[in-house]
Image 1 (cartoon, helix red, strand yellow):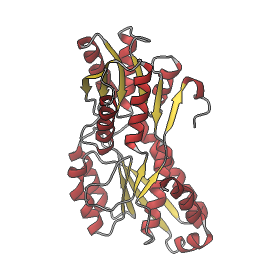
Image 2 (cartoon, helix red, strand yellow):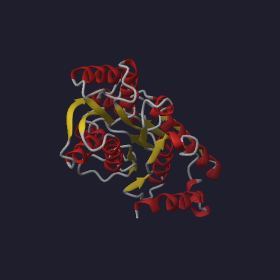
Image 3 (cartoon, helix red, strand yellow):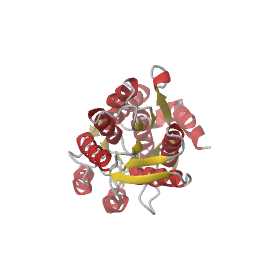
Length: 311
């Protein structure tokens, strides 16, 4: 049922009755807070701006996207950004959580001040009824892990790049990777890297892990930066074709790694769509309307064969 929500929501957002109601306000400002400065979140911002343009065209209202990215994946810095955003009294805040428990109090403060709040590429903190926009993180991890198992013949040593371990979406993917691998008795998870969603850190972690485990056969990742760093490490170690990588998401660097045969494939979420529907739901909240509990933006499996058509 959840996949039917997107066309339903679009129909509602574009309806004349809804547009007429939205014209009651002359302008809106929505704050978008990602995990960190990152190309993946630049794509989210692009989608958010597209939604702002749609609302402007449908209603005549001015819509501003206030994009505020932490310089590093640090929950304290992210909370400080959220606190400053709350103080400006925006019409809504959408955030990709770095730590569900650590972010909860500041999100509750926003709601107390009657500022609509939603989450994207994440799940809400426990006990909070917020609209979340994103892919099924466990399904995404299962797709990647099952693909890797098949590629390495169902046996051998594998490793997981875990991203930011406190981030809800990264943690869910890591857990589901492990559960999938656990179903295969001849697959052994020998290492887990933590890259904090940073490509350079991922490259260093992957290089060290492959040096410590010379029989490693494959990699999966829980964040968008991780597989790019892994691919760089595989190339530098001269292990292209010897160590198989199934990546995550569709950063240009990830797509290039697939083109070059360094990575076999990637299970990608859709950042532009997440940004778009985040703003649409904030707009609805700002008008006092109820929004869905969850909007599934889907998963795309990217391979060398479908690089030109997957989007």
